[in-house]
Amino acid sequence: MKRVAAAALLALALPTASAQDAPQAFVGARLITITHGEIADGVLVVHRGKIVAAGPSGDVEIPRGAIRHDGTGRVILPGLVDTHSHIGGGWAADGSAPIQPGVRVLDSIDVRDAGFQRAQAGGITMINVMPGSGHLLSGQTVYLKNRDANTIEGLVIRGPDGRILGGMKMANGTNSRRDPPFPGTRGKSAALVREAFVAALAYREKLARTSDADKKPDRDLGLEALLEVLDGTRIVHFHTHRHDDILTVLRLQKEFGFRVVLHHVSEGWKVADEIAAAEVGSSIIVVDSPGGKLEARDLLLKTGAVMERAGARVAFHTDDWITDSRLFLRSAALAVRAGMSREGALRGLTLAPAEMIDLGDRLGSLDAGKDADFIVLDGDPLSVYAKVLETWVDGAKVFDRAQPQDRLWAVGGYGAGDPRAGHLCCFGAGSWE
Image 1 (cartoon, one colour):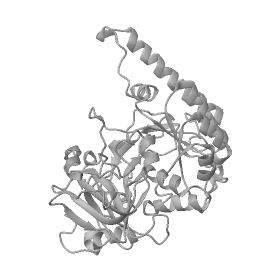
Image 2: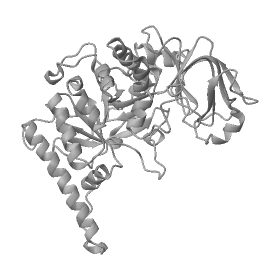
Image 3: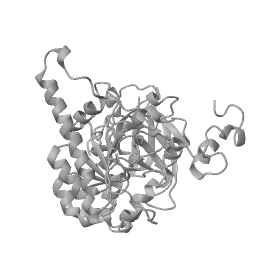
Image 4: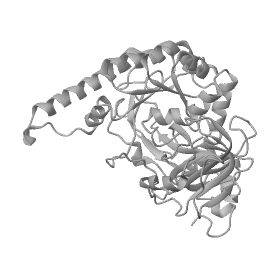
């Protein structure tokens, strides 16, 4: 195998505020790279927030002065990417209308919420925080790195132009059906969505026809956001369960050309061929004790396997609290138990969701040049006995099970659910400063 000169690759590593100054080498661990197989005795080198090299121990040169971490008996996996979570306690749209694209969940997230620490304990390094599904369109989602930060600006992921990245949350089925002005039927739900996109197209035409700034239509934040959807710069994350609701989403997507990721797809196994033919991604939820919602009654553990065989792209999500973020690895394990391939399930926790939100070039695999987001486990990630020992984001350790504070987030107990109470019950003075 061609020898990888890690020292030469250090030039690829761009500095980040949270990164270590010295290179770090994780030696002797089993690496699950996602893109180039599993390496029994591997070396992972990271520097300044980026992966510099990942490969067999005999093929990776460890830079002089690197901090060494003994990975003997450990497993290293790319950080988990959760495409659908509600941690942070944020609410977006209210009860005034069923379609509110101008609302941003960014403006209502509490970064001190204990959910972020629970997610770190579960190995989740990137989160798509979503508004709820009680609207046809409940607002803009936000993509967050699960760093330790005092403000939401410290968590957001920005594009090359500096724009905060996120998608658009939409839903159909029973959640968004209620008294007017909300729709009362599935047919009316789809009609209102069509009307919203037609209005956005008309808004775009008015903007294009008018060169005089004084004659341009008044700025409309909601229509601007819908134009981002129609232009493909903002991906739709669509909550949908029943097979007929899934097909309605595909029909709308074809009609207006927006990019979409299907979420939940409880009956995706019934229309797997149609989903695959539409070439859209599906972020599925795996629940071993379904209940509470009639339209999810046919949710089956085999959904991932059926869709994988059909050629559909599959990822997983927590919908936290539906699945506790600390148990995210379990979703892939249950999917494998029901027939999904090991490779497909692990990819569904890492690279597949990253690709679905246009971050596959930065996240989801142990490849040189990608963000140094990874987790260290004490066993196979699909084993019920395996525990996340450490979680690293941008080359900085954000969770360490060996530390009492972090162990509390991992195992629960008094003080684990309230970061404002932890220092009163569990740790010494100054622990939470």
